[in-house]
Image (cartoon, rainbow, N blue to C red):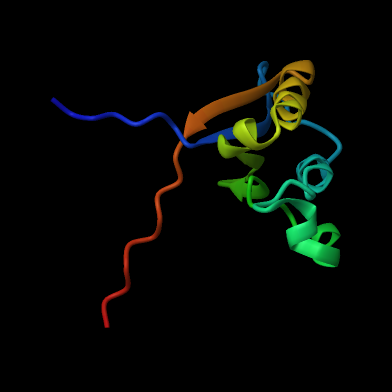
Length: 110
Protein backbone atom coordinates (compact mmCIF):
# COMPACT_ATOMS: atom_id res chain seq x y z
CA UNK A 1 0.00 0.00 0.00
CA UNK A 2 1.34 3.41 -0.97
CA UNK A 3 1.43 6.23 1.56
CA UNK A 4 -0.08 9.29 -0.13
CA UNK A 5 0.71 12.61 1.54
CA UNK A 6 -1.56 15.63 1.52
CA UNK A 7 -0.59 18.31 -0.99
CA UNK A 8 1.70 20.85 0.57
CA UNK A 9 0.89 23.77 -1.72
CA UNK A 10 -2.17 25.36 -3.26
CA UNK A 11 -1.73 27.03 -6.66
CA UNK A 12 -3.99 30.01 -7.27
CA UNK A 13 -3.91 30.51 -11.02
CA UNK A 14 -4.52 33.77 -12.85
CA UNK A 15 -7.20 32.11 -14.98
CA UNK A 16 -10.88 32.42 -14.12
CA UNK A 17 -13.17 29.40 -14.08
CA UNK A 18 -14.46 30.44 -17.52
CA UNK A 19 -10.92 30.58 -18.96
CA UNK A 20 -10.25 34.33 -19.00
CA UNK A 21 -6.96 35.86 -17.88
CA UNK A 22 -7.38 37.59 -14.53
CA UNK A 23 -6.60 41.31 -14.34
CA UNK A 24 -4.82 43.43 -13.19
CA UNK A 25 -1.65 41.89 -14.55
CA UNK A 26 0.21 42.36 -11.24
CA UNK A 27 -2.42 40.61 -9.10
CA UNK A 28 -0.02 37.84 -8.01
CA UNK A 29 2.61 40.27 -6.78
CA UNK A 30 -0.02 42.31 -4.93
CA UNK A 31 -1.52 39.28 -3.21
CA UNK A 32 1.90 37.88 -2.24
CA UNK A 33 2.96 41.34 -1.08
CA UNK A 34 -0.02 41.54 1.25
CA UNK A 35 1.14 38.25 2.80
CA UNK A 36 4.82 39.26 3.08
CA UNK A 37 4.73 39.65 6.86
CA UNK A 38 3.83 35.99 7.43
CA UNK A 39 7.23 34.34 7.84
CA UNK A 40 8.84 31.64 9.92
CA UNK A 41 9.37 33.19 13.32
CA UNK A 42 7.02 36.09 12.56
CA UNK A 43 7.84 39.65 11.60
CA UNK A 44 10.13 40.20 14.57
CA UNK A 45 12.44 37.43 13.35
CA UNK A 46 12.50 38.94 9.86
CA UNK A 47 13.13 42.47 11.11
CA UNK A 48 13.11 45.33 8.63
CA UNK A 49 13.54 42.92 5.72
CA UNK A 50 10.00 41.58 6.20
CA UNK A 51 8.62 44.34 3.99
CA UNK A 52 11.18 43.84 1.23
CA UNK A 53 10.62 40.26 0.12
CA UNK A 54 7.81 37.75 -0.20
CA UNK A 55 6.83 35.30 2.48
CA UNK A 56 7.99 31.73 1.85
CA UNK A 57 4.36 30.74 2.46
CA UNK A 58 2.92 32.82 -0.40
CA UNK A 59 5.06 33.18 -3.51
CA UNK A 60 4.15 34.71 -6.88
CA UNK A 61 5.39 32.75 -9.87
CA UNK A 62 4.67 32.00 -13.52
CA UNK A 63 3.89 28.46 -14.64
CA UNK A 64 3.90 28.14 -18.39
CA UNK A 65 2.48 31.53 -19.31
CA UNK A 66 0.06 31.72 -16.37
CA UNK A 67 0.67 33.94 -13.35
CA UNK A 68 0.12 32.03 -10.13
CA UNK A 69 0.54 32.34 -6.40
CA UNK A 70 1.83 29.27 -4.59
CA UNK A 71 0.43 29.18 -1.06
CA UNK A 72 2.02 26.76 1.39
CA UNK A 73 -0.40 24.94 3.68
CA UNK A 74 1.78 25.89 6.64
CA UNK A 75 0.15 29.33 6.42
CA UNK A 76 -3.11 27.73 7.59
CA UNK A 77 -1.45 26.65 10.84
CA UNK A 78 0.53 29.86 11.38
CA UNK A 79 -2.29 32.31 10.69
CA UNK A 80 -5.71 30.88 9.80
CA UNK A 81 -7.10 34.33 8.93
CA UNK A 82 -4.33 34.90 6.36
CA UNK A 83 -5.09 31.48 4.84
CA UNK A 84 -8.78 32.39 4.63
CA UNK A 85 -7.89 35.75 3.07
CA UNK A 86 -5.99 34.17 0.15
CA UNK A 87 -8.57 31.40 -0.33
CA UNK A 88 -11.41 33.94 -0.28
CA UNK A 89 -9.50 36.09 -2.78
CA UNK A 90 -9.39 33.14 -5.17
CA UNK A 91 -13.04 32.24 -4.57
CA UNK A 92 -14.31 35.84 -4.82
CA UNK A 93 -12.47 36.36 -8.12
CA UNK A 94 -13.53 32.98 -9.52
CA UNK A 95 -9.90 31.88 -9.98
CA UNK A 96 -8.80 28.33 -10.66
CA UNK A 97 -7.16 26.68 -7.65
CA UNK A 98 -5.15 23.44 -7.69
CA UNK A 99 -3.70 21.38 -4.88
CA UNK A 100 -0.18 20.27 -5.71
CA UNK A 101 3.28 19.81 -4.40
CA UNK A 102 6.31 21.40 -6.00
CA UNK A 103 9.04 18.84 -6.31
CA UNK A 104 12.61 19.91 -5.78
CA UNK A 105 14.92 19.90 -8.77
CA UNK A 106 16.93 16.70 -9.03
CA UNK A 107 20.52 17.02 -7.79
CA UNK A 108 23.02 18.00 -10.44
CA UNK A 109 25.60 15.45 -11.45
CA UNK A 110 29.19 16.59 -10.83
